[in-house]
View 1 (tube, rainbow, N blue to C red):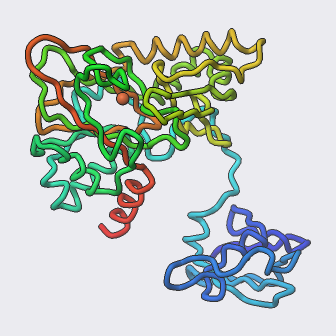
View 2: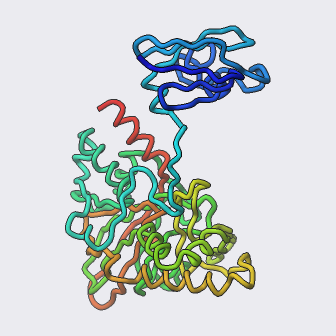
View 3: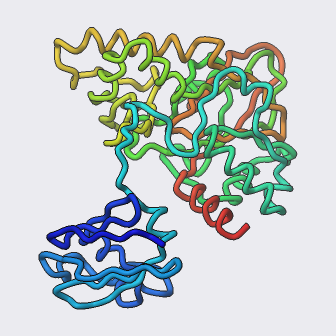
Length: 371
Ligand code: FE2
């Protein structure tokens, strides 16, 4: 038996230990006049409801809660399980700079257990696809093996969960040494771990890099969890962490003719609830920072410098050398990627492309609902 208490003014209902507001309950009714039974979309707007919605009666039977609203004088039914799963009456306050739901912080220890799946199984088996997509959501990183080492094979990975995001670099881009490169990625230089394209808004949220040849000396890939680095910074220097999170940085790319990309976004981005949403870190495309007040710039650079050191520290890094027919995906809002310099005999040829996380998470959620 569930205890139900209507507040004196009729604008709150206590269900067991959880309180709900009358307007919230009315807005979230699941009946056929409020929600389309086919696509689940809401059929009403708030403006169509009375200015003040009150509860005149409530009763529970089994999993069904019936609520009568005034002045409409309609009785609507709710599943108690559904209601409890959506309760918002909590006193818990999350810390500023916490991991998002479903995400798990990692460091060098992930080296021994890198999430990975063969491409044929990703295509053929829902269970393999589900666990690989879940790893991308959890770690922001996963490998793919058993691919053909042929051009544009990386699109086969994207087709497993979503759609390619085309940019001025093309539907895909070649990562190999070029004469007069438009981007330092197309040289043999080592690159500090970074997130790609912070000069776009929105930035691409997923990147895939697939290997076609890797016989040169060096050229190992490396990934770093930007959220782990951000949380370490927060522990060591809360003031510096907040300086990075509460001011915009600037990023630019003007390396090709007809392209002038600029974005103004923080290096560490938090949701209003303090959840880590994004880390943008890319020394090559950082533009002069002009949104930090003079008095805050010292703390800002102190934190920026420390974050750079954390990104470079071995305890944060997972390193591997891609073989032809192997690829990896990173959540570009969270996981930084790098490569070591390469030279000498042999070749290094990777192909990269971007995609977006909303499509990946949608595929994952839908699989979770069906399996
Ligand atoms: Fe990159």
